[in-house]
Length: 255
Image 1 (tube, helix red, strand yellow):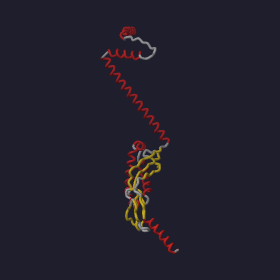
Image 2 (cartoon, helix red, strand yellow; image 1 turned 60 degrees about the vertical axis):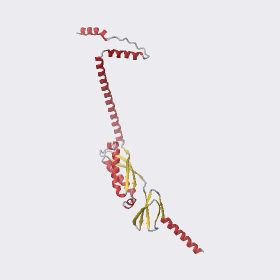
Image 3 (cartoon, one colour; image 1 turned 60 degrees about the horizontal axis):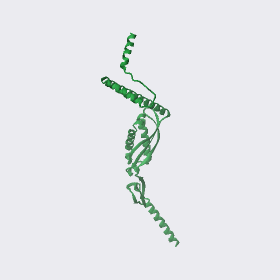
Image 4 (cartoon, one colour; image 1 turned 180 degrees about the vertical axis):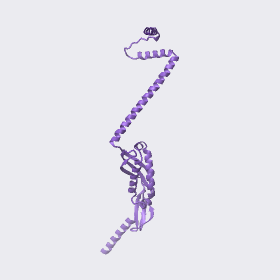
């Protein structure tokens, strides 16, 4: 009984090992690149796949979108400003065969390609372009990185410059520049307001010149506004015509 029982245990262990090596279950977002005796034969999945133990080898590849963080890079811009720039890249594997066969480690390769491209593109740009036209920089980065990773079966869907760290001196200079710009705008707006007010006053003077009764109506309106307030101010309107003879005599006396 003992030899037969031992043989039975060995057979059970062998079957378990065989099934564990032969049967694989892949999720919906996974694909298996199958190598048979070192040669690429097929891509399978998702679901249950059966391999030949020892002969077949499987490389599991995920088709989900990967968010790759590009660490901060020390870069000198075109206008000689030293900054640190970090970014994030979104990509996914479109062809599992190429991702396994054409490159050793597609994650590491994509990360290195992203870092070098980021340093190259930002180094060719000026600081104002990085701050004001970030969308243009993102599109340029996405286009260049995608063209380099396409032979690896990888599609770069989006690249975003995440953060730009400026030196303290540059931050102070930009703050002074922004304050000066706001002061300039305030002065321009004030001057434009004065110009518009003078134009309106000129138009009003022309109307009053054509219709002398308008000045009397305006005078009465001012009296009404003053009288409506609770104050102790009292005034007596004196027509200008009554003062005209005195003004004329004063002018003659000076002569």
